[in-house]
Image (cartoon, rainbow, N blue to C red):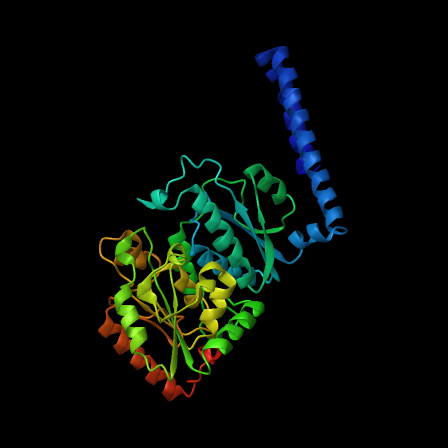
Amino acid sequence: MGDGENSVLRRLAVLPAKLKKHGLRWSFRRAGEIAHGVMFRCAGRLTRLFINLLSQNLPYVRSFSAGTMVVYYDLAVYPISYDICWFLVWADFQRQRQNLRHLHCIFLPIEDHQTRIFPPGYDAVVDRTSREWRFQNICVAMMPLIRASAGFTVCNSRAQAKGLSLLVNHRWMDPNSAGQYPPLSVIYRNLVASVAQNDPDWGLRAPEQGLRYIRTWFDARANGRKVVVVTLRQYAVDKERNSRTADWLTFLRALDQTEYFPVLVRDTDCALVLDESFEGVALCNEAAWSIGLRAALYEVAFMNMFVNCGPASLCILNPRTRYMLFKIIVPGIHLASEATLRDMGFEPGTQPPFAGPFQRWIWEDDRLDVITREFNAMVERIAQSGCGSASTSALAS
């Protein structure tokens, strides 16, 4: 006699005692609970059978169930910012570990904007309208930079996400389980520990069409000169982190204009504001409004230069770029503090373990003397490597 039969017999043996103890009403209620459980299990089996049948016949369903890792970016938990880069690259590592071919991202909405907690001062600068713009033009636009991307889904409600979860066989995180999302700092730390510098397949890539557009832009302006791109931070949140604009302009204007073509990318919020102080400096406002063009600009440029800001992630997470990062620590600013950086897996004063030979973190402020010194040192390093032409950033790794 099997264990299942023994279990049934034991339950039947105690049934008279339970009826005597609890009464007839209990017996009807218990019978209803048993029937409900049986029906629920049967319905679950029928649903899975139905989905399996669909997956054999409908390409859209099959795209979720065969060879695709589905990840969930919860906008009520994670920021609407360039942090999405780190999330997606980290998720792509999870995909690779499971030997899956594609990555699909499902965005979960903010359903209660009143209780969503933002950093101090953030909501006053980036209101709901601005957040919706940033979501479309940063988060959604980032998906094509993952080469294994199989697209994305923007859910209008969490109920919709739960329905879609029935079609998913391979997922990272379950939208039906609350409180299971790791902090963003953990994602950063795990990614830093996971990246292998000699793996050519990791990280972000500029879209091919974006590269075509940027090369056309270069051909019409640079005339074979080495393109040096400076990206400014001019944000109204944590202003202490902003670029020293005057120092950067002085640096760009002092470059040998016969050898270099200096280009400035202004902060998106300021890109359309007229400012006479930028007169005479080439502005690539197009890159401020398109993630695809921005990523392509950075990938093709001879050198990219930043302070610690979101757009720098497009270089940090792309081994084919050349970049220099300044003003990484800003005292008194939580997101740029030593403690936060250590929590994210970065050791102040050192280079990230995945940084290439032409990718450097400078742990000093973006003063003119520091900028000039580090740029000259990098130019010498590139020259000694034999990779000094204007459009050879693909050799940076």
